Amino acid sequence: MKDPIDCSANNPMPDAIAYRRPPEVVMRLARMGSFHQTRLSFMRALLRRLEREQWRFKRSLWAIDEQGFGRAVYSVYGPERVYSLVAFSHDLPDEMRSDRVIATAWDATFTLFDGMPGEADLNRLQQNVPKQEAGRISDSELSLSRANRSVRLWQHVIDSLAAGLQPDREQLEAVGYLVRTTAVYGSGKFGAADRLSIADRPELSGPFQAELLSVWLTRAFSIDLVEHIAKMRGGDQAVAIEPALRRRIGVGNSTGLGMAPFLVNHPALLNNWMMAREEALARVRSLPRADEEASESFKRHFQRACYNVSQWRSEHPIQIEKLTALNADLEQMSAYIGRESLGDDHPWDRFYRWAEAQLSLEGQEQLVSLLLEPYGELVDDLTQCMDADEHESFFIDGSMPVASLREIIENQCQWALGVDYDLPENRARFWYTSAEKLEPRVGERFEEPGAEYELPLAVGCDIKRLCDALQDWRGGATAAEFLLAHPEHRHTARRVQNLARRPYAEIQDNLIAADMLPIDILRCKLSFFGATRFDPRSDRWVRICMYQDAPFPHELLAAET
Image (cartoon, rainbow, N blue to C red; front, top):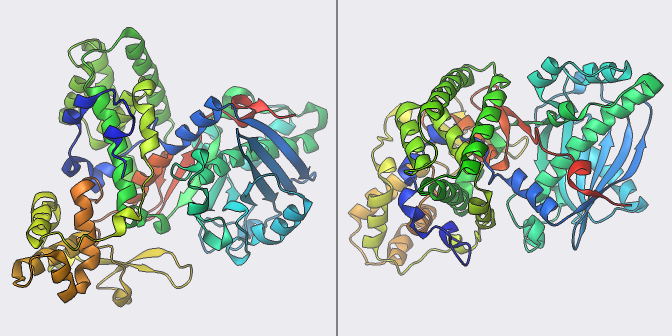
């Protein structure tokens, strides 16, 4: 495993470890469910790489009819490889439009092709990509995705542009996107290229880079499509979306429980994501002073955050309460900035410690995001440490003394040991895989059938059971001897051993409790993607916006001729 503190040959801040927040503070669901995007988020890391390496862009094919149906290809050219988004736009009746994963038809479907597709490739993809799960793609494709139009905004934008007018800014801000993806699949699903086949490519080695490249190009396609339809309808009087409004359009996404167990099932990856984030914050907090340029940059990003929060809408009671608190927090932060020095005496550490005492978790984590913004040269290298060799973390050290296994549990798992799992409210739920879509779901243990199919995601409960079994063990001295007698504890012993080197690898909460909110897990993961405008629709699925305010391909990359 690459520890972020050692991820570069010359670590610029060896003493920053003293400012790291401990796992027992960071790895609680309430805080993880308050995370915001940062400059380490995967979308932003991707765009910085494309710009730094001077990638080129070309809309290679535009075979879209007057109604807006057909196919298109968007290609990006890197130092060594070409990747192409192949997009299909469909005539979808309103009654078939659904964000649910069980939908069978969509307004648009996509795949990210490895290279430049030929006519035979496009014809093959047209037979399969629109079918999504029901079709099959090949290892020439890196992702498979689909999207639906925003019912509220799509027609308004087309009608406005066709009439020579700009869309209403208030309506556009209220939604934030023209299309909303309902799934972006990669890593070998439905025949796509396996993750291991592309992991050695620098541009795709980071987490979810192929999938997020696909989403970025999808955003460009959605703008081009509405402008095309408006031009077909309005003729010479039609106009394009002005650049300032265009930037405010992202890509929406609806994400449900299928994504939630990912962080539990990938502890090494979770640890590296968290370690990078916490090391970045620690580096900034450890700075003894801030120069004028950094202070002014922070203030600019603070004002941008205030504006974004003013445009953030939700109808869910949980998020409404969070937004109310966040708005109050921003007012307090504004007052702090006005009265306190941001120049010397460890200004960022003082600011953070003040926030920890005065602000809600939403406000504290908003500040974490803002503190990183002025310091790209100090923290951006940490994005190189956010992948993980998960095969390495799979092996169990059978030679470990049983006493050492107990010690790790006692030192790092008090959050699990302090829960009485015999109480109904502490084991009220169970995770299982749905037969219909083969995706994770949550069931109510005492109200619904299926607990016999429970997935091993009750980590805290399992750790306590392992601890109890170790206390009663009177056999051999090694973990191997214990696990030979009690193989039911192998998966938990592996997780506990993992904690010895990966302290941020576990969510330190009861994942089967009655009051557990899956949306907290979703928001944590999506914040690392770079998502904004979290809008829960229940405690089990959320809508977000991606790439809002990001540059478009034609703005960031040179045109390929």
